[in-house]
Length: 145
Image (tube, rainbow, N blue to C red):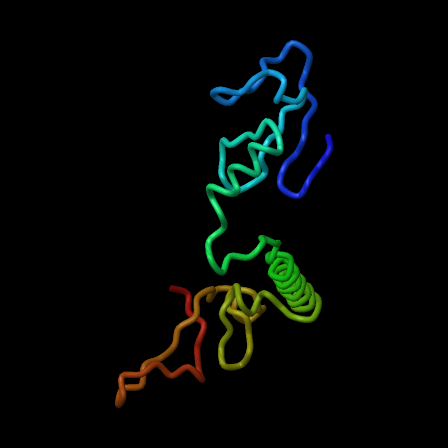
């Protein structure tokens, strides 16, 4: 197929019906079907005269510019962020201990339900300060229920 700036020219298959405008004569038609690549759906131009006529009747809006792809930058930015998150994930997996997130630990840094001294105490409990009714986050304890 031959491409132009706004249209794709596709050779007409043998036996296909000829597209016509009202009042057009067969000698003004070319043996191709031209499909518009504009944002207007459903418009097909049989020849360049039809396209020129259409552009004269429907000029572009004042201040409008030609379209171009602006999503390439954002695609690159998105993939960069996905790569950074993947790096953080693999770094944390290699150098960290996910059991500290999955299991609570007491003030002695013993994992509740995992450490040998805390096998019977799988849950973590934070005590309440009786004077302020706040949780004392610095001294959790492992409990059985």
